Length: 318
Image (cartoon, rainbow, N blue to C red; front, top):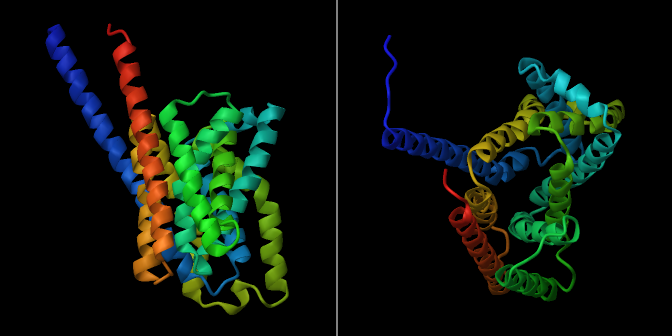
């Protein structure tokens, strides 16, 4: 067949169309991932008869088994073995696994003890915690808008502290643990599936040991719970891995500034579930605190967009 020749204008048009398709698919993947994370409280509520620690243990074990199957199917065992050759990487993954296990456990406990609103606040705060970690760990610099957003967010947390008479440790615990986990993942040279496989592999011996201990005593879920509950526990591996796969696909297709917008979908859905479905308390002070956090996130997102636009202007075109 004769080769089809395109003019430079036609080539640019085709590149723009391809980029738009890539962006749209990326946005779709991101929305799907954060929507699934947002409705996760419904899933954990279905198994709230099981101890949160046992739910966490099942999530770890079944996520590990699922990722092993995925690694086998995608033929990534060689990449996995290469990570083990770097001692520093293994240590980072070990610590990352501890922080994500704490985050998962705290989230499950928060959902099943009527603290979905506090949990959603934690994930609203998380991007700003990531900013602070960027300053102190990665020596990043902040513009005045980002500094302003941090002070406004601090005021929102302070209001929550005054309201309850103590530090909102559920919100801060979730935000800080996931922020540290993200910082460690930034230093790990592994894709999301390989990383999750190694993290759950390191946690599985303890998780499996706890499940066996609970059931040997006659109190475990596999001894006393109904079949539907057991199926939900086993499916927790899928619930863990699928949103992560969608997020990984989105991250490969979208700039971080655009991906940043979609991350607020999950805590917004969780907040709405907590208030309107599970009827958790949401006072006027809660509203003021959340409004301050939303304002802080709006300012931060604005500063990120401005920085992204400037970088596009300063980038020379070929």
